[in-house]
Length: 342
Ligand SMILES: Cc1cc2nc3c(=O)[nH]c(=O)nc-3n(C[C@H](O)[C@H](O)[C@H](O)COP(=O)(O)O)c2cc1C
Image 1: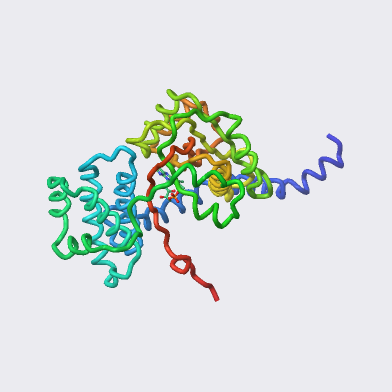
Image 2: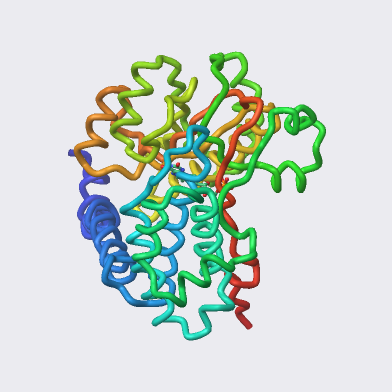
């Protein structure tokens, strides 16, 4: 060996070993440690059925009230729907009253009351269903439900005509009038109709402009039916004419600390896409891809999703029917979620 190289190696070998070790330690072990730490923090703080913290109970109360809103917004109303979510909502509202002494001034509590109020009003004359709800609540809460005046929960009606001018709406109006639509006109959606919305969503910012979002467009009704059966959050609705799957490609990321970035960038892409679809006058609903292992594996196989891609969300797309109902899905006030750090 050339003596100069030999001397160089002799002198630098420890540095090389150190560099190699650092590269190794910053690789898989760091990824594992960070992922485990993240998993433990999630486990400590998420809303388990038994957690009694006000935030956790509120999340479950909103979740079950939203199930009722979904049932109320079905085009083909099913009398007596939702026995299980009604019972769960009653339980969570009780827990909420225990966790939040000032529950009467909580908008989330009124969302639940308003959804239940609409449930009761629309079941007038259906004594069995009404009796079922009444039996779930104390006399005081039953009175609150009956006398609830707010429109913070329940269903609203959207018409196709109201969407004709969407391409000319200012951002504030477009954003305020977008709602998740789960029932569509009986009309196919084509690739060509989707493309302008996808092209506009390409303006979404991403980390260092690496653009991890990928879009899988599913137009085959049989495949849509199969993947939505795995997805599980669209039960009771007819299959949408188009289903889009947003994924994020891990191949664009460069370090363990970027492991969640695809969900951020993919989520931002999803929001842009929803607004772009709305601008194009197409009805849409984001759907989660947070499936259990078996369902996720089956979906990946069915759709042939590359190993490098994480699923971020689906978007169901269709044309607006003449008239459709959807959930109020009331939002917190901005001040409810702000912490000002001095
Ligand atoms: C990531 C994500 C996942 C969602 N998953 C579902 C779902 O599985 N089923 C469903 O019916 N709605 C789903 N939704 C729609 C929400 O219920 C809806 O966005 C929320 O209630 C707010 O209502 P809006 O979209 O009408 O403003 C999802 C929304 C997002 C953003």
